[in-house]
Structure formats: structure tokens, C-alpha cells
Amino acid sequence: MANLEPGWELYRSFLAVMREGSLSGAARALGMTQPSLGRHMRELESALGAALFARSPQGLLPTELARELVPHAQAMASASAALQRTASAGRGEVSGTVRLTASDVIATEVLPSMLADFREHHPGIVIELAPSNQAADLLRRDADIAIRMHQPTQDALIARHVGRVELGMFAHRRYLESHGYPQTLAELSGHALIGFDTETPYIRRLRPQGLPYAREHFALRTDSDLAALAAIRAGFGIGIMQVNLARRDAALIRLFPAEVSLALETWVVMHEDLRPSLRVRRLFDHLASALAIYTQA
Image (tube, rainbow, N blue to C red; front, side):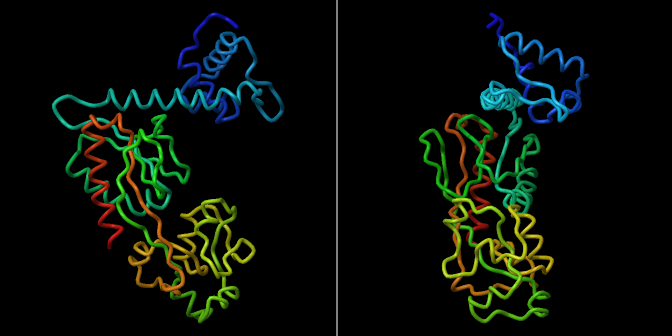
């Protein structure tokens, strides 16, 4: 292996090629020319003393080494982004960038009004909102703050419990008027149910007992919570959604509230090393307060 220490810019280009699958796509994503990006790849392979890609009719195929490098390069990307967020803070006022992650539904349906209110009081703080149902690694600084539906166990994380988000079974009035109101849980099997496509361990733990609520029963299968929510609102059929979100639309009717009531314990989380950061603490405290009100509504 050569004695050169590859710079971050080479690994950034490497990650772009892994993500895009081609030099041209990676160059466009990074705003570079293709020859420059190709030079980055040659320099990185020379520094590592091994090939990272093989050309094929389908594009660039990563070698085993390339796949093994990805998590380490992603950690470098997270560290670089965290450094930029820290350096973005001004002096004498609360400013800078805070990266926030939450599930798709929380990020798009719950947080926007809370963030708008926060913006009114802290216009100097820029928020990077990353919706994802995959838990960000706060220890690796993939994000500064996370909204999670389970209690973190790592000692290095600060977690504040803000309450429970209740889930219930709902359908649009239009659907029920066309297809009838199920009178028993057993009758649900004769309706258009909306549910998951891939059953994860998390879904398996939450799956209501005594319901015909398995993949083979669904008329619409999707792993997108936002798509399922949109289908319920459109009158496609019967599905599970947050009770507080359903209250916003009088046309959404709750079914079997006594039998189908699931609780998601909700936490606001950040790394303990961010405690001195005023901008992070301000957003953390604001979200904890606003979500506590939301969960108790």
C-alpha cells in the first residue's frame, strides 16, 4: 500500500460513485467534471494500493474492498458535516446549523408547525431536517437531534421522554359509506385494509393482536408510512395512523378504539457532547416542550 494519506475529498468522490453507480452521475451530483472525478478515483486506488471498481455494461461494479470502505467513508462524511455545523455558529448570537432527524410521518406531519414557531424566535439557526424511518447514528454525529419512538440505551446520549403517540384504526367516511362499517374485528377481513409490505421486527411487536392484520390481508401494501397515510385520507380503505393526525380531518372515522390502541413512547435525543451548544439545546428544549403538548392533546 502506498504511503499517501487519502484526503477527505477523495472519499467524498468515492461515496458519490457508490451512490450514483457511475462517474458521470457522481460528477453531476458533486458539481465536478467527470475527468476530475475520475482522477480522484485513480488517486484513491493508488493511495490504497487496490482497485475499487470494475467496469461493466451496467456501470461501475464495486469491489469487495469498496463495499467494506463505505461505512468508514460515511463516518467521515458525518464527521465533516458535524464540523461544518459547528463552524457555522456565529459569535454573540444564537446561530448556526442544527441537523434534526425524525420518522417520515413525524418529520412531515408533526414537526413543520413546531419548526415554524421555533424559526420565529431563532431566525439565526438553520435547520437541516432529515426524514427517515432508519435510526440515525447520533454517536457518529449523523444528526444532532433525533425524535425516536424507543428509549435510547447508549450512555453517551441525552434522552427526554415527551409522552406517547397513540395509533388507532381509521377510514375515511367516504369509504365507509360505500363499503359499510365493520361491526366486529372479524369483519375487517372483508374490507380493503392498508398495511405493510415488509414485516420488520418493529412492526411485528406493534401488530395488533386478534386482528386480521397480516400481509396477506392487505389490499394495499406499502412500506411508506406517508403513502399509507395518503391512502387512508383518499378513501382507499382502512389503516392505522396517529390519532392526533386523524383529529385534523373530521371525515376520518376511528374504528374499534377500545380494541385497537397502540402507544409509541416518544423521546427527543441528542449526544451529551452537544450540551454546550446553545443552538442545539434551544431546539432540543423547544421540541421537547412542543412534542409533550402534541402527545397529550
